[in-house]
Every structure is written in structure tokens, then in C-alpha cells.
Length: 413
Ligand code: KG4
Ligand code: ZN
Image (cartoon, rainbow, N blue to C red; front, top):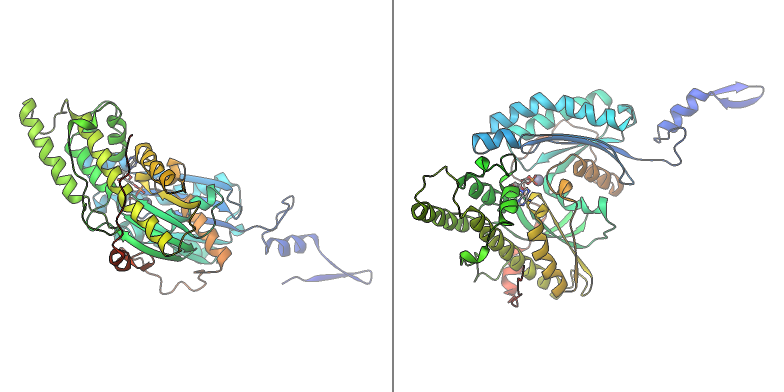
């Protein structure tokens, strides 16, 4: 409450009280206008990340601790190991993001944290740390859906209005959705089994790329992209998955098994043991990357046609956003560009460091929710994390019923 001092017959507030009052609107002396500022915290998988972002999209501070190298050595994410690493790093990472921002925690408008979907043990660390902070600072809490955050990141880096189509391809997820508003999604299709990043990670592991001098510290998908540049995809003739299914779903398990068989065959031909690097590893990487791109493009093509047929997207200049770790792959981006050129759409992708998991996307999702006035909690009693949580309203059956035939696109990459 603003208390006024009575001086010489006029009510004059003290300077300190004026600042206090203005600060309740997030005013800072020297700052030209009022401002929302959110701290975002991400621990849904294997990155401990935090960032402070303001409502104009300025990243005031950020910090990240990646567990990739540890999990590469153990051959995949072991949840209790991920949990332990989050516990060891979360305090430092949040502190680093706040210090870099030079703002006082009391100036935050809210704290936003990923609470779904993800690894239970990892989500739990971020949530309990955040709830403690929320209690100490007495700030509103904004629970974040990890895939919503990936989808909205583009609005931080480009001016994009709703609606737009989003393709989210990562290590844990694979989906196509129409984004109609901050928390208003229509789910058009998703992976029936594993995500493309998971498949690429498994192929990279089977190819022992961790032993390859050029890719030993790269995630599986990044290693495949790197090696593919030196390979010839035409050495293998692979048919993309779900060729006959006229929907927008994806599948990557069959492809993974097929590549496994090819690797076993090549090991026999080259006379080497599992664990050694094949001389044809680059060709295999090029082939798997190409088929992955073709499969993703085909499903996305159908989604564009469906949305245009139902007038869910404009006929011209509709926007396709691709995000998630796998969308940092430039070969896949080029394939998507062939599609958007052929369908009079515009392809937009966040920069690679914002495609993979980060704290900025969580803080930005918090800003989006603050601005829209949705999902801002003042009571945190019943908050739980949710390892599984679908995104939006599922209309994939409707998409399948429309049975849209997709014209052939020449993938000259
Ligand atoms: O979005 P993200 O950081 O975490 C999840 O939410 O899953 O994505 C990580 C995934 C990993 O599977 C990684 O191999 C893959 O993204 N990835 C890539 C590339 N960089 C990371 N896949 C293909 N090409 C890349 N350049
Ligand atoms: Zn992610």
C-alpha cells in the first residue's frame, strides 16, 4: 500500500515509497516502461536449464547444464542418474541465470517451470525446487507443458501470429499440431512408437559413433547429421514408413530395425565386430537421415493440405514452424523448405540452440501465458508433475477420415 506523507499542506509520498509503488508495477528507475519478467526452469529430460526473459523477448540471463556426455557414455539416459545430476546443478544454474540478468528475484513477475511431459524423476527435481522458490519469493507459479514451450519459441524470435502449423520433432516427442492460441492446440498426428531423435540416437549408438573422433561428444542426431555429409545416401534403397496410411502419424521403430539389419549385414561384409566403426557408417548415416526427412515431409505435407482444406490455415503464406532437437538438423530443414515452397507456405525454425531444450523457451512460455492471462497460479497446493500428457485436442481421427492423397514431391537434396 502506498503511504502518503503530509508536507506543507500537500500529500507527498516519500521517494522510497514511490519506488516501492512503481516496483509493484515492475518499474525500474531508468527503465522507460512497465515490464513483465519471468524466470523459466527446465528439467524434463537431461538438461538443467534456466533463463530470465522479459515480455519484449529480451533474454536477460540464461544458464544450462547438459548431461549429454554422461548419457552418451552409459549408452542412454538412466533416469536416477539424470535426477542426481539435476539435483547437483539446479541451484547453480538458476543462480547463474538470475545473476546474469542483474535483476533482483523480487522483481520477477512469475516463475515458470516444465511440469509435463517428461521423465518423472527429472520433472520432480525442477518442480520441487521451483515450488520452494515460489514460496520464498511469494510469486505466481506458471506450470509449463514442454511441447507447448517448444511450439511457442518461434514467437520469441520471429513475428508469428496464430494460427500456424507446428512440427515438433525431438528425442522424446514427434507431433504435428495446429496452434490456434497460447494454449489452444489441435493435434493432427503423432508418432505411433518412438520419436525420430530417439531412433537417430539408437542408430548412432549401434554405429558406435561415440568412438568416432569427429563426433564423440555429439548427441546421436547431431553425429548422424555430421557424418551424413561425408556419405552417399544412394547406397541403400529404403522405403519410408507408413507409406499407405493416409494420416499424419509417424513411425520410426521399423526404420530403426531395418537400419540395424543393414548394419549387421555390413559388419559381416566388412569382417568387423559390433563396436568397431564401419567404413560404410557415413553412407548409413546419410540414408537414415534422408528417409527420416522424407517421412517427416510426407506427414507434414498431408497436415498442410488438411488444414487448408478445412480453412484452418490461410491458402497462401501459411506458416509452418519446425522445432525440437531434431529440427536443428539442416538437411531436414532443407527438405521441409522444398515442401513449403511447393505449398506456398513459409517455413520458420528457431535457431538450433533454441530448438534443443533450454530455459529460454520455458520463460517465454511463461510470458505468453502472463500476457494471455492463462494458467497463472497463486495457490500451488495441488501441483503435481505429469510424465505423460498429450498436447491439445486430438483430431487425428478426422485427419485420417479425410484420407488426403499427397502428391509426389521431388526430394532433390
Ligand atoms: O528437444 P531435445 O533437446 O530434447 C527432447 O525434448 O527430446 O531433443 C534432443 C534430441 C536428441 O534425440 C538428439 O539426438 C536430437 O534431438 N538432435 C538432433 C540434432 N541435434 C539434436 N537430431 C538430428 N540432427 C541434429 N542436428
Ligand atoms: Zn524438448
